[in-house]
Length: 221
Ligand SMILES: C[S@@+](CC[C@H](N)C(=O)[O-])C[C@H]1O[C@@H](n2cnc3c(N)ncnc32)[C@H](O)[C@@H]1O
Image 1: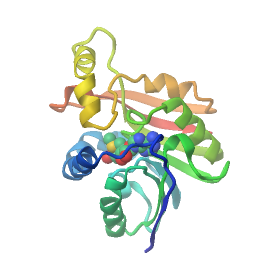
Image 2: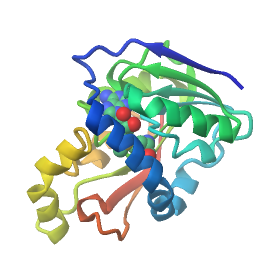
Image 3: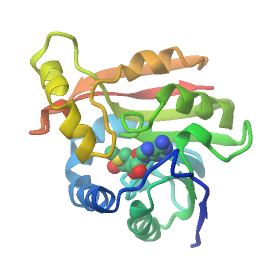
Image 4: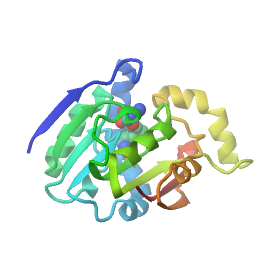
């Protein structure tokens, strides 16, 4: 099992904060099983039958290693250095050959049409420009390749959850390093130029109310 890291994200593209970077690494390590339990059914469907080589956007500390096939190769697009040590540990424990690319999803350093599958969970909420990231996902996928996602999104307008998302937007984004609970990611994915999009909306029930409205699915390049 090998792990490699390439560092090329610039400070303009991703600013790693020592305090919040460490906090989020520890938070997702500690809360990963709980979050995954709430998303498990939808993740299991979206991430079913992945090929042996997978590109993952923002894998964090490795929440999705469990969905990779045995002896998989994972190319991790993870610009936050505070995630890397725990991600390496999770990959080792899961028997995954890990290559960390410390770049942003807006500028994936992979050739056109080079990937069979790209996956993401809880990442398009945090990237600076999700439309640019989706264009990059399409670019690196081979024709017919699959983007599988499980993301949290804005609630319906006028609902208490939507009000909560609005009211808490600033402290939430500060704590979770730029995360927005107000993105209409379903529309963005549908309009990103994929040939076929299959997605569903669902709700989880956690005390983290702004985080409870989700989508999951697949999009074919
Ligand atoms: C909320 S965490 C989710 C981590 C993991 N995917 C999970 O489901 O637990 C968001 C992740 O996206 C990463 N991230 C933030 N901005 C990014 C960007 N522009 N490109 C790629 N990853 C990014 C963060 O470093 C972090 O690991």
